[in-house]
Length: 141
Image (cartoon, rainbow, N blue to C red; front, top):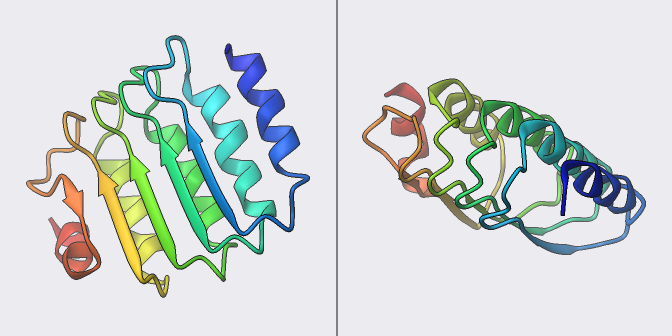
């Protein structure tokens, strides 16, 4: 799947406004960049009935803070979201700016379950896996 293919997926996802649970895996997708990933993350904001979201970008080396920023703009709109799993394992372009933006948005969420994997990224914070209990400390680090 190329970036244009992922952009088409984003356009299709935006039309699924009644979806309550979504799992997207782009694991190890060679060539995926922020441009392609943002098309999907921005489309998520249209899924206002979503209560469970899993996004796996593990080992997508072209994915970075732009993807996180697109994701954060959509997460603000997902008022029913209760379970969130995000995997950015070995996404070396994900850094402190993206991680802090994500943490700031997540603080306003009423989540029952949160799992964010930032292992082997450019996030210099000591925290690589975020849970609800650790979120506040993560944002301040």
